Each structure stands twice: as structure tokens, then as C-alpha cells.
Amino acid sequence: MRQIVLDTETTGLEPSHGHRIIEIGCVEIINRRITENTYHQYIQPDREIDEGAYEVHGISNEFLADKPRFKDVVEDFMSFVNGAELVIHNAPFDVGFLNHELAKLEPVWGKVSDHCTITDSLVMARHKHPGQKNNLDALCKRYEVNNSKRELHGALLDAELLAEVFLRMTGGQESLLLGSGDGSNASNMASPIRRVDASRPGLAVLRASSDEMAAHDEIMASLGDACIWHRTAE
Image (cartoon, rainbow, N blue to C red; front, top):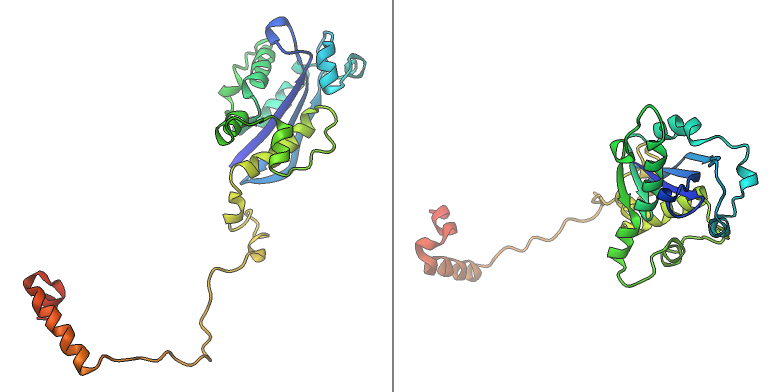
């Protein structure tokens, strides 16, 4: 099972107002194990970044001036995520921006959902923790994920934090697995099988007395034909 935890940073809040993606960060999870395989790219948006957005992520127009455009990185990006389950916090936001970028390109790429399945971790968190804060910082605190380096939003850093949160939020199931596929984890798990020590003395066998056997037969007889054990004995 291959999952990609994805986050983006943008020039503003609405692609319908001409805002664009300026950073994409992806972290790969395979069989509930975070791998070292990541995708990270800054993107030249060909427009100014809103002041409010800059205060969130700290990415400047000057920093992006020499970065590639989305059309130049789309093949590498789509190849990385193709066929995976995308885990995104507030998925409609990021997916909306990605679909907006894809719609601008030729040949037509279609939508993200044509290439991946999408899981919204914010919806999951709200269902699991109704009435509570479920932004990434709140979830990191709730699930004891260290986010001390998160002074500003960043796509790759946020994807890394969300990957840790997602695994903990979905139940710690990794502890039930026999291993990651390479056998590295199996040797660290306690065996559920306890073998009998042949040197131990045998268990004592206590046989029923004649009085106990007579009482048993009396009860069996009182049950009549309804007693299947009685019929079997006959």
C-alpha cells in the first residue's frame, strides 16, 4: 500500500482569483512505514504573492524568481504521485490548486483524482475529535509529534509532520504488523508462541470416582433421548 502525504504553499487563497502554487512537498508511506522517498519543489508562479500568504509561509517573490514553472515539473510530480493514495489535510484546498494548475497545461492531464485516490485527514480528524481544534499544530500536540521547527508553514515540513500524525491518528496499527517486508521488524517482536519445556513434570490426571461416574450416568439418563451424548454412548 503506497500513500503520499502532500502539502502545498500558494500565493493566496483562491485559484479562481489567479493564485498559484509556489511549493509542493510530498512524503511517501509504504505499508505504514515512512520512507526516505520524498518530492519537494519550489515553483515560479508568474505573479505576486499576497502579503497575508507571505506571513504564513515566508516565501518571497525574489526567492522564487529563478525557480521552474509548474509546466516544467509536472511530469516528475505526476510520476511521483501516480497510483498512490494522497493524504492531504483540508484536501479541497490543495486539490483545487493542483487541478487549476493541471487545467492550464497541454496535453490535458485531467484532474488529480484521475491519477490518485484522495484522503482528507482533516475530515478524519474532525470525525475522531469532534468539537476540538484539528489543525496541524493541534494534532501534533495531541499525538505528541514534535513540531518545534515549524515557525512558518512549509510544504515538505508540514507533509513530514502530517505523515507522523496520520500514522498515529489511524490507530497504531503498525504494531500489529509482522514486519515492513524485509524482516527487519520481526526479530524485534516478542513471539506470541510459548513452547512447553519438556523437562517439566507432567500434569496430574484425576479420574472420576465410582460415585461421580454413577451421578453422571444418572443425569444422562434423566435427559432421555434429548441428550446427544447419551445417544452417542449407545
